[in-house]
Image 1 (tube, rainbow, N blue to C red):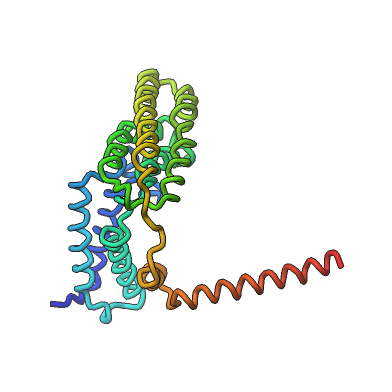
Image 2 (tube, rainbow, N blue to C red):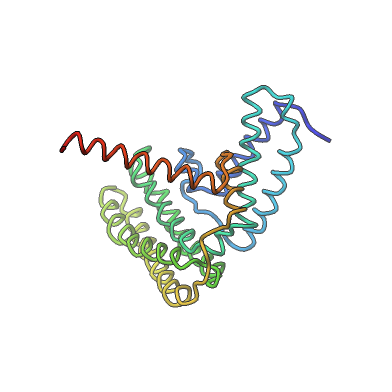
Length: 271
């Protein structure tokens, strides 16, 4: 039975967004929601299976609302909620980054800590206490990556990018955090941060070795998703009506127009 209660839709949409933030705490931090700043995402197989089931349930529920009866703004919000749910479900069932993108795990750890350090939304000591929670969670996230990644499905370039990012990110744990801990007077917190940083560093180095020794030699995946799925992404995620061919032709047209304008400007500057 279709539902037409706009207030009920908004109540459920708010619950949905809150659930997304809880499941993706680093995304929450990035969006300015600091309720989960001391956590990282759980990407264990059990958690991924649960999240997959939940997102199918959310999509079914949102598609069960007849938004034709809603006010114009609410119809837009309804379309967005359906689109978000479909996008997440597509990730689980078609794109599968949890199996194919090793950078998903290392970036969760590195970005999760970096965002807390770079954004001065709270006193440093408060942010460092959240950093401590994420440092302690990092080894488990990286272990989940080693368990989940299917080397033969990983595109080689994704492995290369993940390796480069992880190797450069080591300095975050080995240099930046120890330097910042000296700025807080709480010696107990200093000691806990230094120890958690040491353990996280070891885990990240182990993950780097895993990528080099176990993943890189077996990478056979392709990052190209194919025309059909690409057009689905354009239509559903980006709300664009272009076909892949139309988008390509539009890109070339804009490139050629820009090149011509630059040449014209160059002639005016230096005839």
